[in-house]
Amino acid sequence: MGERIEAELVASVREIRVSEGDVVRAGEAVVILEAMKLEIPVVAGTSGTVAKVDVAPGDEVQEGDLLAVIA
Image 1 (cartoon, rainbow, N blue to C red):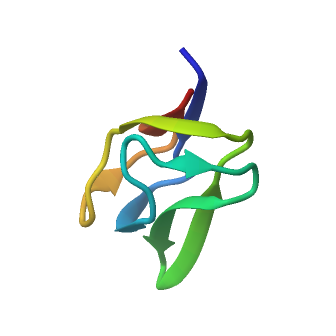
Image 2 (tube, rainbow, N blue to C red):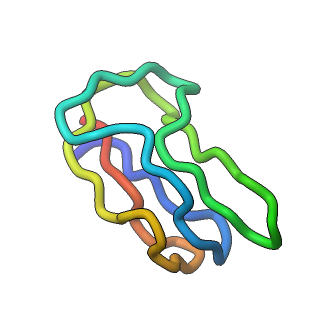
Image 3 (cartoon, one colour):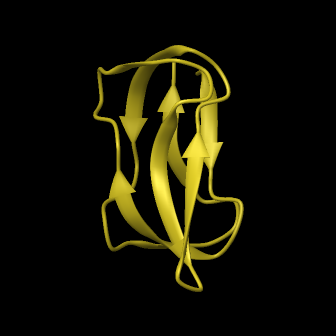
């Protein structure tokens, strides 16, 4: 199915930097999370096409929650 990008901590989604169908490179920020007033970029581990974005700005996420999938 591709690379699953998951939340590494409990946080809120501050910004989505990609849309489904976008091409991303490894290391590119896909989602920005916010926890304790810190912005935490979540980056793609591999290059590919964004197959799915599973969150929206303002969503609260738990550790391990799916944020996006890169095909």
